[in-house]
Image (cartoon, rainbow, N blue to C red):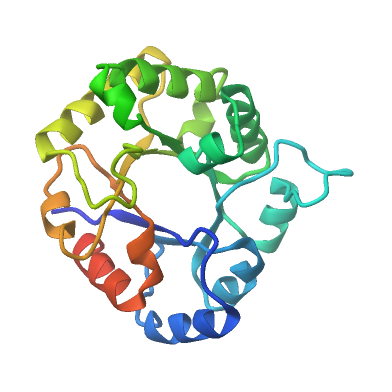
Length: 240
């Protein structure tokens, strides 16, 4: 089976001492298919150790009086290559709207950053059979007016919100059907060169089964990426 991309989303976790220990334990990872998205203040530690680094969020502004924000101009000037955009926690906890997600995607791409666009449905939306509607809406709104030459910089991470951190996983067949649907939506947008990742309770115990998924180019890993031993096992299986 082909090598996959593995993205670690640390969210708002780990201290400086823990980051130091983490770096020592994952030092054997030397693969550009592994992208680490630490809390932004820790990005330099991973850059200095040669890792591909992404931010967990990015501003839709390039510069100015926007306290607490980080622009893609600043990030790319440091060598940060990616930004996670539209994560469900940004949408839910910070009330991030589709138009903001779109503006962030465009700003990141215009400043030569790769985008990891998160899409996914809640438990309630799943029960109401609205999964396809939600995915189509989020993808079309985020990727409208994308230049053809920029599609290779984009990855879509399908993260069923009901699965994140819950330990519950869709069946492989369900995920594969959703991947087919996502590709259909992209095709109608004239986009055919976008990689698709799966996220949502990915861990060292289920990665072998998840790697069997057809049409999946990699994984977005949350909680299990915080434990270096667990993360190494995931990478060992996914990236060969």
